[in-house]
Image (cartoon, rainbow, N blue to C red; front, side, top):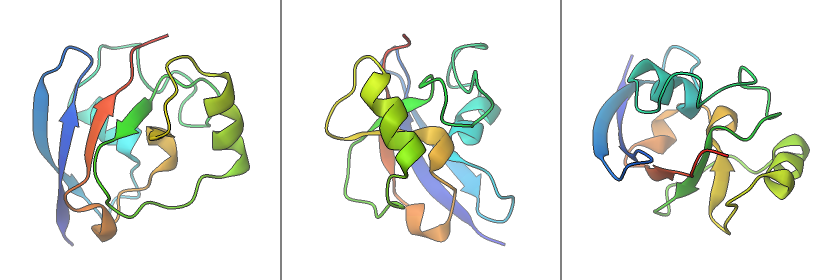
Length: 109
């Protein structure tokens, strides 16, 4: 069992430095919910199925991430506030490779 350190900036510009477990099969979106970094009802609306875009975040550093899948790419195409560094938090599993990841939550649609 090991944890990774994440730096997550909320939609109000507040930085949260959190520890996330790698042995619980959680996604970045679930970590954001667990730490109440976003308001209730403003993240993970679809339950992590890449169907709503509410967990869109901007990747701020070069931490290696899994490739973008077709569903995520399609949702990002339809989501507001998308940038080149946009990803859906629900599609990023918490693994040891994420140690040091820095993200900023996109504005809520």
